[in-house]
Every structure is written in C-alpha cells, then in structure tokens.
Length: 340
Length: 290
Image 1 (cartoon, rainbow over the protein chains, first blue to last red):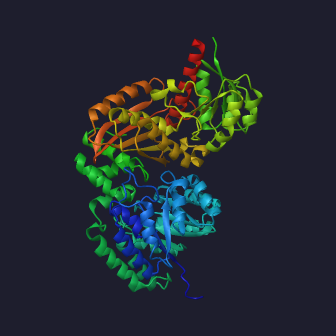
Image 2 (cartoon, rainbow over the protein chains, first blue to last red):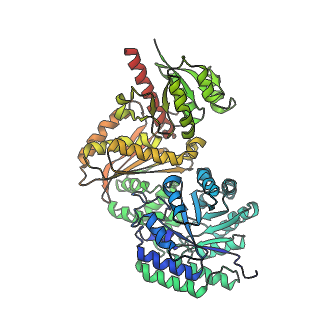
C-alpha cells in the first residue's frame, strides 16, 4: 500500500490545550473539536487534564470536567481516530485512573515521567501490556538530559513493553541540532517508533518537528492552532501543510485540518497561546510550559516580575508537577530575600 | 539496662538507614538484619558493624523467634502483605515502613500513644509523615475541612527501587492518612522525583480548601504540632507559614535528614525512619516502665 501514512500524527489539542485554558474546557468544546479531529483523520486524539489522568488538583489546576466526562464526550464521535490519554505515575494510579480509562474505551495510553525517571513507569506500562492495550512511553522535559541518558531511559521503557517512545520538549527549550542528536540516537538504537512533541517558546516548534522527522521520528505531536501550554505547540494545520509539501504522508486531510484549526479559533479565541516576553524567558530558563498560567497569577498576587520567577525556577531545575515552588519563589522574591 | 530487641527486614536505603539509627539508640538493639543479598551495600555495612545478618528474608526472622520483640519491615508493600501474618504468628510487633497499610497508621507527633497497643503499626509514607501534621492542624482549627492535598518533591537519588515500584500505594496510603488524621472528606497526594544536582531536599506542600479559613488558629495549631515533631525529626523546617493563595490555605515544609546512610537531602527517608524509631523507643520505654 503505497499511500499508507509513513508518519503518525497525535493531536494533543484537548490535552495540552487544557493548560492554556486553565483546565476549564467545556463539554461542548470537547464534542465539537473531537468531531473535527475525526473528520481531519488524525491518528490519535489525546484528551484530558494537561497533566494527564488523575491530575486535577490544587497543585496543577482543577478541571472543569472529570476525566470520565471528558473521555466519554470525546470518544463519542470518534470512529477512525483513536482516543489517547497522558498518564504520569505520581499523579495517576492504575486502580483509580487507568482502569477507568480502559473501561471508557481509551485506545492508546501514553505513560510519561520526568526524562530521567523511567523506572517509575514500569508497573503502569507492563500492566497495560498485560491487558493487551497499546502503550507508549513519554520522556518529559527531555531538554534536561543528555542523548545518552535519554537512550538509557527509553530502553528501560521499551523493556517494560512500550511500543513507541516520545521525547517531549515540555519547556520549548530545544534547538534544532539538539533535536537531531537526541531523536537520531534513539531512532538508531530502539526497536520501537520514536516521536517528538514540540513547544513554541523559542519559535522553533515546526522547525524542530521537521528536524525530528529527518532524524527518523515516525510520530509527531501537535495541536490545532498550537493550542497548548506556554507559547503553545507545533500547530497541527501547519505541520500537515509542511509535511504535504515534503510529500510525507500522514493520512490527514489538509482542508479538514484547516477547518479544525478555524474551529479552535472560534472555540478558544483569546485563550490561544501567543509568544510573549514571559514565554520566551520561560523557554530560555527551560521551565515546564504548564507553569505559564500559575506563574502569571502568583506574580500578580506577590507583585513580582513573572520573568524573575521563571529565571529562579530554571536555576532550581524544577520539573513538571513542582508548581508549588512558584509560591515559594514568588514569596521569597517579594520579601527581597535570597532563595537557595 | 533492658532493651527492646528488634530486627530489620529489608536492607535497601530505608533498612540500612534504620540500622544506623538503631545502633545509636539507647533503648533498641538489633538482633538481625535480614534481606536477600549478602553482597548488597546495606548487608556489607551491617556485617562491618558486627550486626548479625541473614539472606533468608522472613525465614531468617522466623529462626530468631522468641529473641525479637519488634520487626521493622522495610521491604515493599507486596512484601509486607506476606510478612504481616507471619510476624503476627511469631508474636512480634510489626512496624511497617511500606505503604501496605495493614496496621494502624502512626504519626508520632499526632497519635503516638494510641498506637502503643497495636501489633502492626503502619508509618504511612514519607510524604504522609511530613504533611499529616499540617493536615491535622487544619483539622483541629476547623470542624469542616472540604479537601486537603499534599505534594512532595524528593531527590531522585533518595528513591530506591522499592519506592519507585510502590508509587501507586504511596499515593493511596498518603491520601488515606490525610483523611483519617484531618477528618477531611476528600484528599489527594502527588509525588515528584527531581533529579537535579545538587540533590534537592525533600519538600512537602499542603493545600486545603476550608470555608472561611482562620489562619491565626491554623498557625497556632501547626506550631503546636511542629514542636512535637522537631524532637524526633530535627530537620523539619517550615519554609512557608500557612497563608492564603488563590482562596486556598497553603503551607510548605522542607525536611533535611540526619545524614546517616544517605546524605542530608534525603529528608524523605529520614522522616519516616525517625518516626519509626520514635515509635519503637516509646514502646521500649513503656515496657520498661511496666
């Protein structure tokens, strides 16, 4: 079959976009976008709280809808597009969250962790494989580890049963040469497909995605209009267009994807991410893009410069899930005292 | 002077650190250090200290029946589920450092005396030992607590394989501890491992939703309970006093360890072990008095 897609596109609009919408995505928005994604023909649609299953919390933000509501609504219009979820051990558990997602008909489970901690995923990945579910491993904040370390962690995930490995540039901090080196090393040494998930903080989301493909990646993440954390993701409509120019088959219909992007503009309007002074500093500091909204809020409360908060968080090498440190850093900055 | 004779089951980070603390204790003496691998770093350390060791795990403990009053179980949640009935039948008190949640949950600063009659005591989790005192203070200050959440961040290096494989149990046990000590209706626990170098010290945040929070009262209750923790966990430090942020009560503590087996950043390991030692010493004292 010569026109079989050679590249798998994962649409994370209704998961990464949750960060940009302070986790308040509504039932109507989910239904409308899921139908558009199905019409466009993306391979997978990832849905849920920005930090994945079971993550609704004061720490990273409470969701308007429960996981069950979001997944049920999204599943309804999907026929060819498969429903996917993001799962971070330390937030989600097998018993409470993964079982539920299985019951609701989720078809791809992407188990993620900070990029040096793959062994915390062992139980979740192997459990799902025992249940014959499709499972990928996701290495988050992957700008923080060397290519060799990422390979070692990816191999662990592969040994637990992961059928794909995605490197996430969760902070939007990668430069193209780094993408080439890291994705390339994984492609060369893993048996499973490798993917890349870009963020736009330094304006490189599309460029980095293309470099990843040239380095052998067979999976790309993106979101319609780049609707996602921080400065947003690789805009899917642009990815589809550029890949079409390069004659790389994705199975996605360009016009239907452009329609989906227009829909996102109507649905989320002013919440669509833009580049700003703060998102650029965040990318330079290498801080998780999901911190953008809480940093803005806390900076206002403590009357400090949000850029200073990002610089300080970057120095501390914080990882996703450590949002509580924003308050500590801001209160220390406000008090004008040195933080460690 | 009469001492409580103890054994340690599990020779990883937790078990080995416990051993060093037992060695220092005036009222505890280690009869056996039991695990599976005589070549492990913990076993080597124990042998060097002249402590009797066994590679037969729970069977090693069975062989010293009658000579041991109390066993610290530092294996894994699945391990403790198997060990608990054996220890009970041997007449040994089990102090469970895994999140198996078999016995009564014990946070010494809050309910030490209530636990002294139990045959199986669960030390909740490291995050539980750090967060429950604050949750308890909020529960003392307010009749109705809608929701409590805790987030702990620990250094990757301080989390051994047992900790990593038990993340789900860690979350479930910590959540259950928060509910039972604060009386709140809903709870949530989150754990982050951070690989940053130099290693981060354990840090725990508690956030709560209460109607019309009385910060003065909460702070006073918290100070009271902190004064009961620091005698057995000297590195317990309040870094953000309870305050209101975005309509929720939030407070943070940092825990530095004593630096016995792992360096001081491993406050997570230290706080649960200090709690277990505080419990065993209280039991020793009670038995001496009796």
